Length: 317
Image (tube, rainbow, N blue to C red; front, top):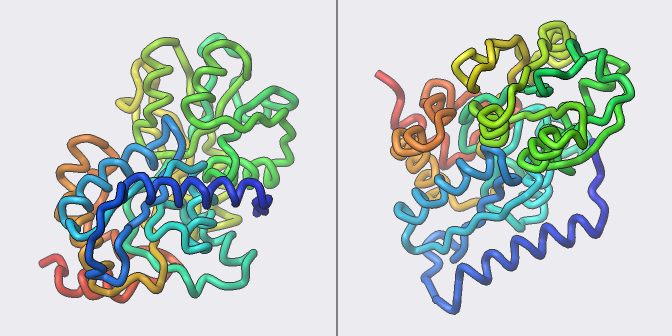
């Protein structure tokens, strides 16, 4: 786990507070659900968490007109967990491996519930086509982006490096900045853990010939070590321009909420996820994975009682 220093925590809390204040704009609304503002922690530039979070916020504003719904840009999973833990966010996206580690390290997850499992993220290891890197071990000593600070990418890459014994010159950049740095030759490779397609990687592949590195062996190692979080998978050939299919591993992503969220509000948030799924999928392809059958598969994270009530009322036939 990566402890977050006080400065980072202060910045995050300040960003969440500023977002709420800006959205409120002096408008007073009734506390129908015990709150007037609903804060959604998303992710960094070029990442699916940020883009799907922004689209989801639009749906929430429509379904919850009595609330001011705001989004907060973050480093991703770990940042989102800190904001939820501190009460500075009400909803947030996180990869399951990050949640498991957070609960193990803090000794308690009683404050945390899940609205549901949304879609799976895939580990990308991206290099330019003319790179000498052909397998994971070729990264030894090279300059590699491991994701932004407190992101799911950073967390998962740290787990991979620890399990494989690989040492790299780590650079911490968000998805968009990683793609630019790879394009300009400032780094030798970039990791990305996110949904498909990853906006930053898709844009890079449209501008440069790139390759994905086969991570089949790494996926087996990680799945053996953490079978509840990591699953061997394949990045489909249709994901990025001129990039063939590539073995890798996937990790489930959850939409999380605070356990003290009003039951009726959690019910309505869950309703919004599934009733708006088609609209989300029309704008973000990974949202096509969202469905009621897999939504309840949240691992060790219990469903919020309000969300659980929605699933019981909407069981598939």
